[in-house]
Image 1 (spheres, one colour):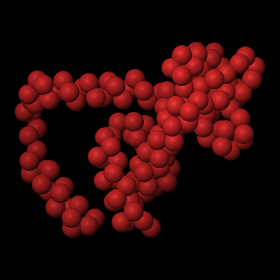
Image 2 (cartoon, helix red, strand yellow):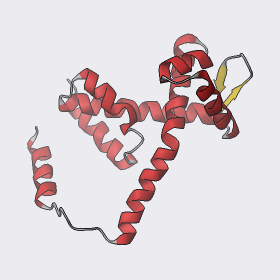
Image 3 (cartoon, rainbow, N blue to C red):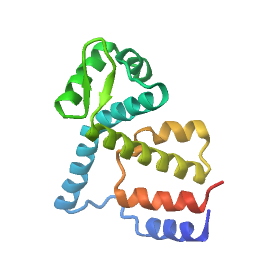
Length: 159
């Protein structure tokens, strides 16, 4: 661990106020941010997977999305309808699923954030399997500020 990170960690730990509650506004703001992340997390995961399938195979089909997400095709169908209503994808029955411009942008941002978190965890020395598992989801719950710091740390500590 670098001296800089150790100093930051010492600072954070010495300021630990376990047992003390935050003021209600700050507390509510934190929970609001988490709720918002949870609302978009699943959609971002689907859009990112659809983008990855299109990039790798030229198309994204509901059956493969279901396999890769570990859900039924009916579940994928419901999510596709929801994403269509949100303007993120277009689809026709028994055909491939396509990202709209908004969907492509969401997939790009989600993929970039995912890669930053994965590289950050790897730079910390987390094993590949654990880093992949932990990174799945973390990108949805950290701020842009945190992502940028993670990006810089990973770049400075690339193996």
